[in-house]
Image 1 (cartoon, rainbow, N blue to C red):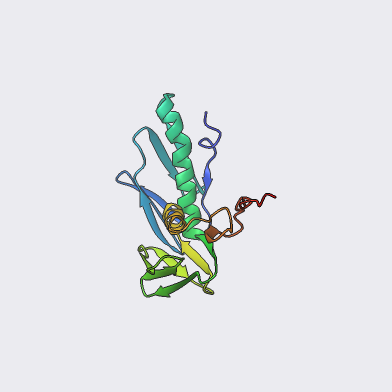
Image 2 (image 1 turned 90 degrees about the vertical axis):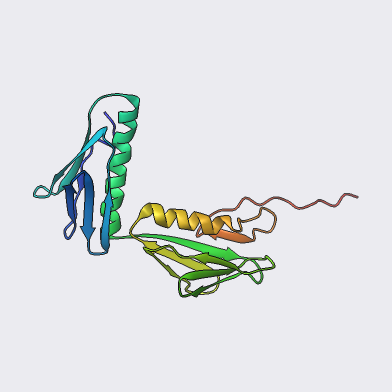
Length: 181
C-alpha cells in the first residue's frame, strides 16, 4: 500500500469537492479547479466526514505509482483553492530588473533586448521592487512551471552569481581564474 496514497485528504471548511462525470471538481474561496483522474485509481469523496480517499484497482506497478500521485494532486488542488501557492524570484546583477506591463512581464537581464514574457491566465504576478518577482496562483503546477520558465531565461551563473534565482536559493560559487607567479 502506498504510504502517501492511503492517507485521506482532509477537506477544510469552505471547500467543496465533488466527483461528477469522471471529473474531480474542487471549489474554494480562491477559485475552482478540476482534473480527470486516471482509470486505474478511484476517488471517493465523503463531504460529510470531510475527507477524500483515493484507492487503486490492482497492485500493478502503474497503479501503485498513480495511487500516490493522484492523492498528492488532490491534496494540492484542495490546498490551492483554500490557501493558494506562492513562488518568489530574485534578480541579481547590475542593471538587471523586472517590470509589469498589463499581461506581460518585462525583464532586463543583460541581453541586448528586453525580454517580454506573457503571463498565463490564472496567475497573479507582482513586482514589489525592480529586483523581486512574486508569482501567486491556485494551481501548483502552473505556478511552479511559470517560475521555472522565468528562471531559465537567465540562470544564476557560478562566478558572480548574476541571474534570476528563487528566493533563498543557494548558488554554488566557483573561484575565478587564479593568478600564478
